[in-house]
Length: 311
Length: 310
Image 1 (tube, each protein chain N blue to C red):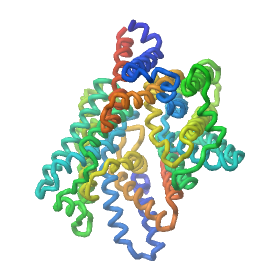
Image 2 (image 1 turned 90 degrees about the vertical axis):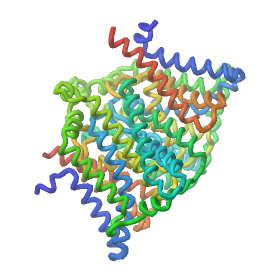
Image 3 (image 1 turned 135 degrees about the vertical axis):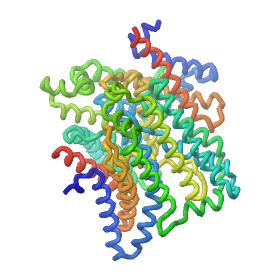
Image 4 (image 1 turned 180 degrees about the vertical axis):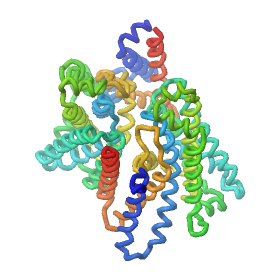
């Protein structure tokens, strides 16, 4: 079976299984609601996951720990710029993307100019972003403009708008990775940085673009999440740090770099939401839910690695 | 001068700590006392122990994203079982250390990425902690409380403990035969294996040591705070990584320094106290901590780069 050898298939199988098990309990009731919720919440995880995937593809040691801080900062500044004025949604989007550009460049500057390991550089920088967000937020809760909130919570042809955005982004990332020279360069860097440099790949430019991309994705996710949930909160990004890494790995992207997997990120994002709702509907408490989530993550990683070893 | 720094990697962490300490004393001369020092470094002991735990993992080229959740879980066990039924509590803590060792063995045997396995384990530890202690509470055992608030003559408890911990780990990791082999696993696991050492067992030992230090960190933390909750130490994950790197450790190659790691942890703990003396707006405290981190690492870069050129 060719299909079974695709690295992304497992996250989708797991997502479908979790969906099926939940629906089995309710005997089919609420299936469309569950699917709708999974698409809405999975969209945010997918957007940050796509960014994290690009960085992890760069090779060992590359990771962005500033995703939650970038999300919060972008959402805070965007909502402040819009000030709940009608018709300012595009302005807010521009501000959010600008924040992403800024934090991405700052992260890369630390990594490149100061030769810091990306883990430490993005961690230290995220503390600064967090401070800026706290300072500019000051506990205010500004509502997003109504039209934007309607868009973020709305649907088109039965599909949540945020999911459409995330699917379009995923398609874009796939296109860039598979069909453009830039994507090939990125994969080459991840497979062997030295070889890529000797082959004439502009390695530093590729790394810079990747770190900017992850920050822009995080900012966009923050902007959408704040519009979706009716305002920015200082801890809004915190759960997306582990989430972004988890969806990348469950999705079948190699943690060693040089191989990314776009469809897997979406499958894993749906799975991460569905597994929690499955455990919820079976009446598991918060503690049991977390333990099982962890066990399932490790199980998938082990399954994926033994399959790799057999080939 | 610069040659001195490149030859003795430990100097830079020492100097950063001394500078920060000097600046703190300048801002607040009253801190220059037994009581003041105790306050400044009060929370440093659990951070130092957690940093050493992280160091054991970084020593074998892995990274542990579950440490904060693990320390929180230990804190919950300490504040509940260890207080109510000491024997059962000790047994649970022992099992936790063994679980860490098993995690190391599994990671090595199946060739799994440590970052992902520990990520998954962070959910497991967090879930068990939440199960044990759904809402903040519990009580620190009296003997632990007494141990953490002991007042030795001349030197405050936090400083004395840090020196003792650093010295013992230095002996274990830098001076003993097994410590050298463990660092060798980080340097080149394959050649250690070819030389006849069982790498699986060594990795399990490194992880087991990390678990042991994680347990000590959680117990120390409860001794200081007297109660626990399931999220009490989540920030230790990133704090401990930062401490190892501040102390002159590197992510690959088994290049670590236990004394440096303890000093790095003290620096991080002191940075927080220093910033509150600075009367900085609370908004900027976290950011300033990040800035201090970047500054110290930049200073280190200046020396290592000269080293490479020389």
